[in-house]
Image (cartoon, rainbow, N blue to C red; front, side, top):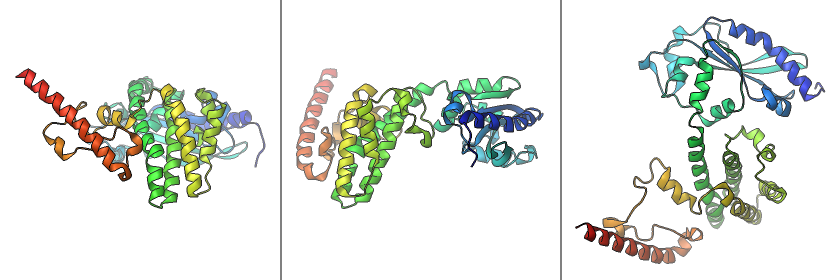
Length: 342
């Protein structure tokens, strides 16, 4: 293993990849070339080392007929295979640097396909392009335009993702681990709690207005968000540790529940995030944002569970009583409104 400073490794890696960047930029079929991720800007000084790979993206100007657009870019690329340049390499390959071989990941895209408004970037791609990529070549300025267009609705996307995570956390912290323990499924309880840690960390990045980085960086870079004090970070670190016992699952549950209770108001998460998601963001759970019960009320009295810790069959009778009372109130209110309209 070569021992050297991160900065010198970064400089050597950039020198090693420079001929490849120049060769790509010189190809007549290439519209744009961009460096991504750890090799760029301030990220390079913080992340890049001799174990890092180099991410490069190349955009081709190959025409994409409208009828060949598919939501899966693989299908569109397959349909245009005969039009793609023969020199395109594998996604992953190695080049030589002063400190040894370094892996290059060459992300390959069709510019016309990416510019199509029907093409939506996943969050991982948004994060890569929101983290100050380094544009090496942009023949007609289309890459700069593309990045601006794909990130234009970033705040809306982040809000939707935050709502999804908060709804999951309400179950993955407060409900599912205890249910799995009651079922005797201790390892499943731990799996849910581990997922809850991931969801909470992702939510912290979103609350800071950022797309979360790759998982390998998330825990180590939480300090850059200034959202956790020393006690919060210690509780999170303790919640990550796992011995696999039922007793330890309840310990982890307690740590996460207390931590999330402290953080939730400051993150702007409503008390019943699950209900909020169902009403405001879910694409398939309920069509009306506000419901009144109505004709079907007798069939689902007790479905509403306003007290979260009663979401299990051990408290079903109390939940049914509260649900019946609530539905009766809603039904009466609806009757009064209908009478008034008549």
